[in-house]
Image (cartoon, rainbow, N blue to C red):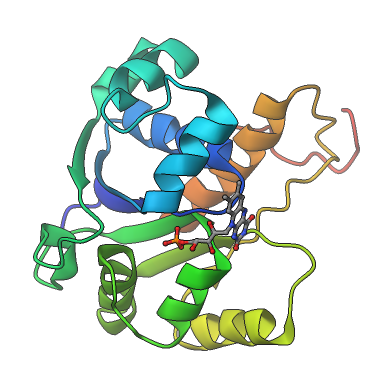
Length: 205
Ligand SMILES: Cc1cc2nc3c(=O)[nH]c(=O)nc-3n(C[C@H](O)[C@H](O)[C@H](O)COP(=O)(O)O)c2cc1C
């Protein structure tokens, strides 16, 4: 199994910047990304990041936004309706998957093993194959069913990595906040990175 191939799913929760920053960081490291975006994920990309942030224009968008280094990696885009895509099977060699951001709807589908879409099916594959599944939920406040769905996913082996950037790095920009989340996601997927400085024991040092 190649450690340099991961699946990224983008669903219709707020936080499209977390997704694009994570994609750019992986690509810049030379990773191959199997990408699937739900219908509402596509909508949120445009709503939050502008008209250039379309699936069709993704590589040029990422290069313009995060630098030409993204050309070091590759992306295969799958339809969320294609349950026969590579990542729908455990025989495919993806080492892990992140759902970033993860809507409460998709969270529920993963928690209950529904596999109604490629995002849900690929996540189910990660759980059954005991591979890394990183779920980045975003909602506030959360209902009891939503909290329980996170527990179900955690019990099944997923890492729940909420979209909760920290402030002890003294972020100045939205990109600083997104870097922090993307760094956490890369670490959870097993990649090292320099997206934020290591904690030195003191704020601001
Ligand atoms: C502008 C906008 C923002 C949304 N933000 C969130 C959110 O932060 N969290 C969430 O769980 N759902 C959010 N939703 C609702 C989801 O997009 C909706 O439940 C959708 O059915 C999710 O489908 P998907 O998981 O297949 O992408 C938002 C919808 C819109 C239009």
